[in-house]
Amino acid sequence: VHEGRGRAPVRVVVLEAEDHVAAHQTGHNSGVIHSGLYYAPGSLKARLCAEGREAMFDFCAANGIPVERCGKLVVATRADELPRLDALEARGRANGLVGLRRLGAGEIAAFEPHAVGLAALWVPETGVTDYGAVAAAFARVIVERGGTVHLGHRLTGVRREPDGLVLATTGGEVRAGGLIACAGLHADRVAALCGVEAGGVRIVPFRGEYHRLVGPSADLVRHLIYPVPDPRFPFLGVHFTRGIDGAVHVGPNAILALARHGYRRGAFDAGDAAAILSSPAVWRMAARYWRIGAGEIVRSWSRRALARSLQAMVPDVRAEDLVPAGAGVRAQALEPSGALVDDFRIVEGERMIHVLNAPSPAATASIGIGRYIAERAAAHLGLA
Image 1 (cartoon, rainbow, N blue to C red):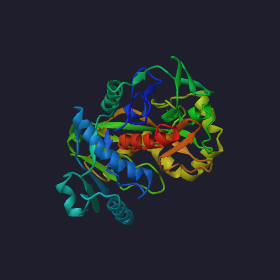
Image 2 (cartoon, rainbow, N blue to C red):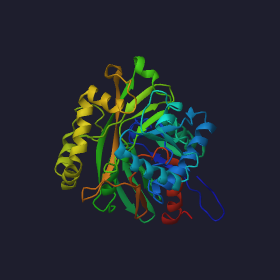
Image 3 (spheres, rainbow, N blue to C red):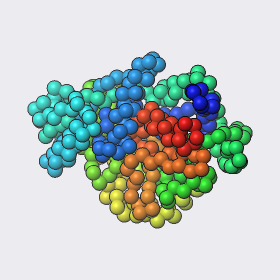
Image 4 (spheres, rainbow, N blue to C red):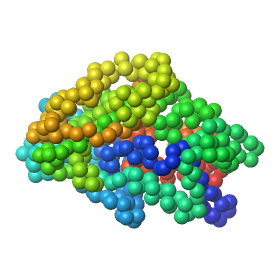
């Protein structure tokens, strides 16, 4: 909401489909505040993660939300990972991570006494928080500044009129001068509902399962421990996260889900499944990533296979100390070619802006993304 010189008042109205905020991706993630280590220099991810990271630390501190700048270790456990670790270090420095430190095998224990590897990167800029609490604070700020948050208002249609838009929702009609759509798992469907050209991009849901370490294994990890990511796959690999509550979780994996809200193993939605299995782009993606995907499925069903992956970084982890701890579903945009969209993707339509792809580190970057969209809205929606 603003009333500046030469500007008409702008009132923000948030339409939330569910009965509470952070019901999906935001409320099911690991709580990591990412440093910006992984992203191509100059990309939206790199720029907005760096901006959003510091803004997120500041926002949490200002609003009494638990937050810790704890740091993380990225560990190379095989010789073929060392060149990739070199490239990751160069990328991190290009993205402005001044605290980044390269560690030899003998230095790893000073940061994580139970971790092993040939080399590692220490990334002190990484942190943890509770994004459910962050989303609730965002909603409070909107209301405090004169905006409105409508829960239970799922968008069902859009009608254009000479002076704006009429949004049909399950909670009634809402009139607006412009629309910013951040629909996550339904971003492609909302774009289609609004008649916005998305270039054939569609959302594919990936379920990411978590386990919690209990017993003796719960004391093996101090901070966050990640593997060197596989450049053939856009996900970061199964890793250790000591959350803001002190519990250590491992995960997430990445398994194609047959329901956009498929948080339970075996969850199935006939419409979602039909759309996924009838898509040539999905089959092209499967042909490209089937070997990696098969490994993800094995680790999903076998605690011992999952433990073996973790033991490459922390040998003392025991399979019997892994307890299932829920799952999230990641909205991943897919090109018609079968390629996974890597960067954030935000497109414009008549009186509209649509966020079509905002995977990790979108929670970290959320304040930066908001500022970026606000700048585009000021010009595109006539608010400047």
